[in-house]
Length: 320
Ligand code: MN
Image (cartoon, rainbow, N blue to C red; front, side, top):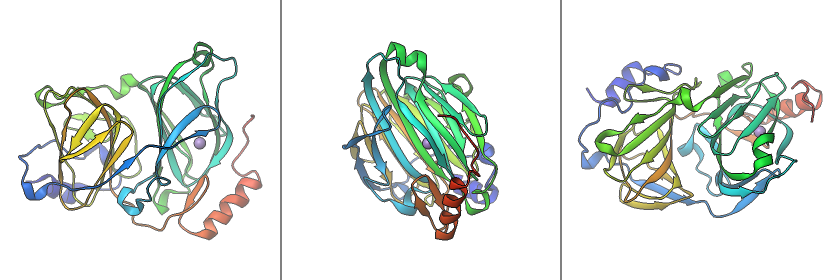
């Protein structure tokens, strides 16, 4: 039985923990290789608040539309050195509705507080998975103790869409530690994988997701190619966090996002030297997307409601 058959028989919107993706590696059939749709270069950096120097891979650098769904936005804070300070950099109180913000800390520490009372600090290897859904106010800053020492900061923030049926669910906060995420070996000494969400073989990530998502931190040694397979109607993209790789024959360097096409299932990732990648995979949400700043809904009317609710204080309160 192929991976595709298993998925179509069993997959539902909530059983990501039992998804069989990649637990049955198979020989590559040349006809099932995915083409590379596009390599998006992370070239132009801007500041989000005064704490996050990021390049936006999408939607600014590339409007990938449904091809990148359920992912909406990817800001990459490539390694950057901060001076010691008593005034932690960051972003002040702001709202979100209709989606999730996922923050992965590779170097540096980020503190988060939101209007539900949830909050926490994520350190290197940790992930914050905040489901804004019906709406939260939050603020995101460098953690004070880390800011006092200063140092190298390296992070990703990813926005994940919610289906219409879950956009107005209650907010949820998941603080996922490096220990919970764990790590497992890739075949043939190819390296290790940290499964944040979804599943690689027997290794199940701790994040609870609303729709099926695989979010993996792949650390490759370069000793062997990595073979992966995903159903052709699902989104697959790889952000190069360190080093250089070749994905199905196309070269990509640090800060590049490799977006795969829908014409096959399989990909082969070759690294000549150690490299690190963030893999994004998920079932697409084929619904209208109407985005206005921090609100991502399905209709203009819902955006107007979000603005009214925010202005009338329905998102709650959070001190600066
Ligand atoms: Mn935010």
